[in-house]
Amino acid sequence: MTKSKLIAGVDEAGRGPLAGPVVAAAVILDPMRPIVGLADSKTLSETKRESLAKTIREAALSWSIAEASVEEIDTLNILQATLLAMQRAINGLSIYPDEVLIDGNRLPALAMPAQAIVKGDSKVQAISAASILAKVERDRMMLDYQQRYPDFSFHLHKGYGTKQHIAEIEQFGILPVHRLTFNPVKAMLRK
Figure 1 (cartoon, helix red, strand yellow):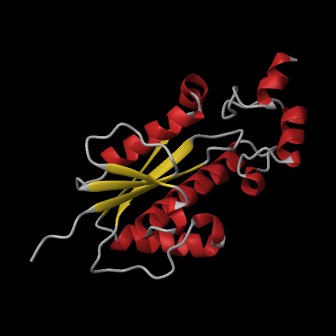
Figure 2 (tube, rainbow, N blue to C red):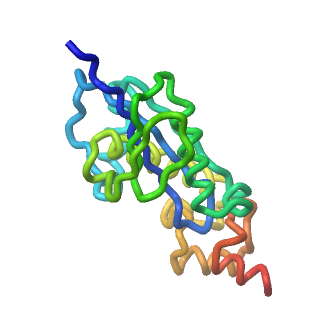
């Protein structure tokens, strides 16, 4: 009997927002403990994501969540910061995977074989699981921001550049959690 390959699925949350870190997760699912309902986190309700995240943490062989900070995003650029967060998540796994499957079209530098899969979060269960963990963790951070910065509706816009968020920045100013290289924040700084 051959040992099945240990596949780590990797995805991120928070590439587009104006605030907060980019969060990546890596998950190695247990083939003996299948998880029903895994899908791209963007297609699931918040309640379903929360429930699946709990199941993933309990049933996966290994999982890891990592981030790249706002400072790293502003220094490196969002793509490089995302790849860095992914590297950190993979390196945080307690089990060394045989192969890594990453959502998207770019790969971080890794010591093991890896493959980028466009729309992987809807095609590969391990990537779906990673997408769920990353999104749940980032949303949790946004609730923390809501407590720290009550003038901002982070619980609603999650740091994305919505009309409401932009109006809040204009009214209350730029926060330490804002990405200074992202427009319209960058444009506001110039004023």
